[in-house]
Length: 129
Image 1 (cartoon, rainbow, N blue to C red):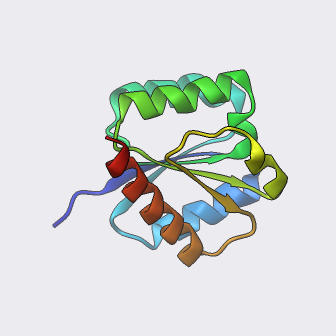
Image 2 (cartoon, rainbow, N blue to C red):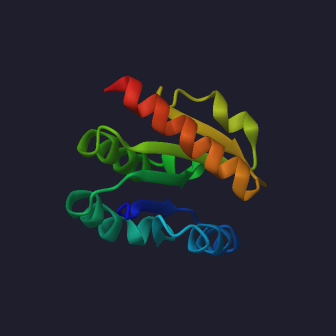
Image 3 (cartoon, one colour):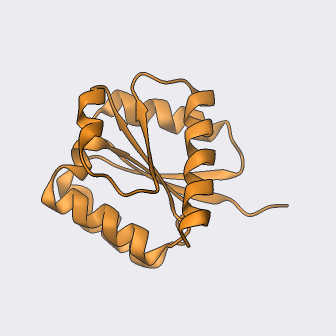
């Protein structure tokens, strides 16, 4: 049996977090860890340092805060093969200079679109190593 992939989700939108919990609960090869916002960053950072993360799904707004940007960059450094998917309801936010191996996904999206974005991010991360 393949080991579970660990997914870290950081999104301030409770409905989005709950949706992602439901999506990943149906996928037995994924274990989801979820954080709400800045006050959770210390806990998220502890996980980044201790867990073997495979996927990071973060709201674009997380990336646009100094703490969130640093957290995502630290996760990518600590886990060179980390698949990074940034999500947002506003595609105009994608114009920023995001890490080259991050995939941007517009909200709302379905489970298949999310999984396709994760697969794409995994390929990009593998090519970046």
